[in-house]
Image 1: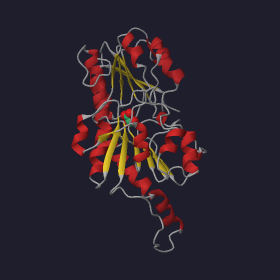
Image 2: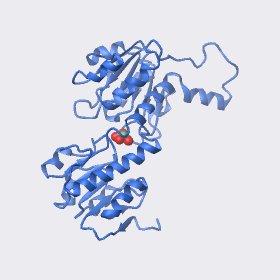
Image 3: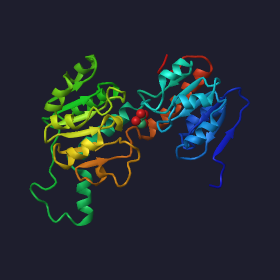
Image 4: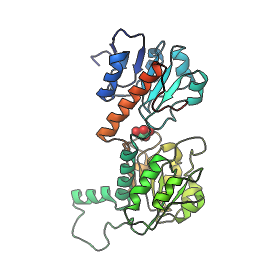
Length: 334
Ligand code: DGY
């Protein structure tokens, strides 16, 4: 690299904010830069851990994203001046929120503003997996398309199907509203509590096992917490219909990938569409990438231009408000 990996932008503020990526949307960085001194990791790849630890001592806030682990070690390195951490994501499994709360560090995130984008991608991935779009395109490109054929490239449709949504928060609900429009027979969901919002689409709350057994499409929208880690494991895949399509747009950690690979290889389920994996990126030699009945996307759930811009701006406001001692618009530990 010719350029310095760290860019300093000063504005005579008493606050310094560390921003972990050079390619965070401009509008978000600009909002911070106008009111605070900015120390920017001037690369479009994640800040390596050792650098991260060296760059945070004394900063007042950290503007980060889901690739940046904010744990005890990092908080120790930052020291007592750190007042706020804001992540440009709705997911916060990369942040030790309890530890931040213990130290009086406020944590911001970006719910709501990416709900539509992520729900759209979830439905797109579900349809692409069921109707085998990447496989079909490959046939068209490679000469496999010899002629129209009665049962060639067929897959299940959403009409008259049962859709099971695991995790009925904002994104799960937005997915339900969308799939309802495809003339589905029923939508069932599982969640810790009964959700009033489910009435809007006539969705019924069921136990996890019932959802697995009844659904033609199983969609994971659950947050990653210790209770949901590997909730999709060998036993869960065995309970699904052999014709089921599994879609995950939440976090890779909810799935035991070895069990999923086995389920797809042995046709225990029909197919899977994954926007999230463990690790990310998935190594090129990972068996899931070689399976025709599996689509893997590079974590693009919220990747509409508007959603990402709005997420960046909300992250900036979260930080600025916290530094002023005001309420963050989206705070995790308020
Ligand atoms: C999030 O925000 O947590 C999504 O997974 C990525 O935008």
